[in-house]
Length: 411
Image (cartoon, rainbow, N blue to C red; front, side, top):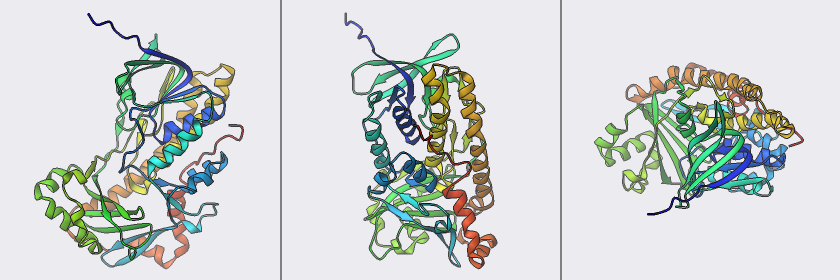
């Protein structure tokens, strides 16, 4: 009879589940403050494409505060100082980030795995930080009604893992396992679209940075990755089966109908394996905390891709969390009231941002996806061309956002 292997046991101050932007930023900030921190990441590495790549001025400011702004900008990246959109009647500027009174008047595009690798490498410099890769959280440990840690399993065959912690933070994304274990169900706010991600070659004669094309039935967004475009085709919610049923040739033609410059390059889409489907969600939890546990980032509020603000909202959650709980953790006085304070601080900017996304979905995206043919620029966008100074406001909303956070100086 085979003998059961005892789980590997750890004890720490904070156990963070999920090594995405929220989890890794929080882990780094807590480690800098001398707080014992263990991050559980179910994958062996961060190398997963077709994830959010935008790092906004608010996040760059926060990285500057902890001495990492220069390191991020030393990575291979693209800076975008404005956002232009192509309609049937011309190319229009939506936002001009150069108008921001900011040290970083631009958005940075870089692979998310490079951003996360940088955070992980910095956190690893601190003796009380550990990143357990290939370790998937499957359950919570409890004493009465209080969460006291996480039960995990190693995905490389090394058995069970138990992490006992004063606080467990779920930062494990929009399909959060810990949220399911808690039995918490987010309020769905509705999203009319899904996104198909794929790559196509980029040529030196192409525009730099971002290129966006709007036509009836779809929106095509091209993100400059140097020698290739990372491309998002926005389609109607649940529309992938119909797209696939029409065949790969029809899909290639759809792509070139949005962006004729891509003609001759779409053969790079060799099969449907080259097309990745993102099912878009827009939701948030009514409650983000309970005794011993806190949810942040997409686990607490899934964002629409509109504005590309998901990473930055997650990072802001992490900074606010670190600012509020570090002192109480050091003095041994952490209480549920501190977790409630995090939720209060971050719920308002989340609601405001999601409200703006819902308005954009209802007034623009839904209308674009309904039908075929060209789409003329809306009247509001024409006004932005007549009065360019107004391009500051969408740049401020997207680039800085609502209630940006900065790490405390002593962290």
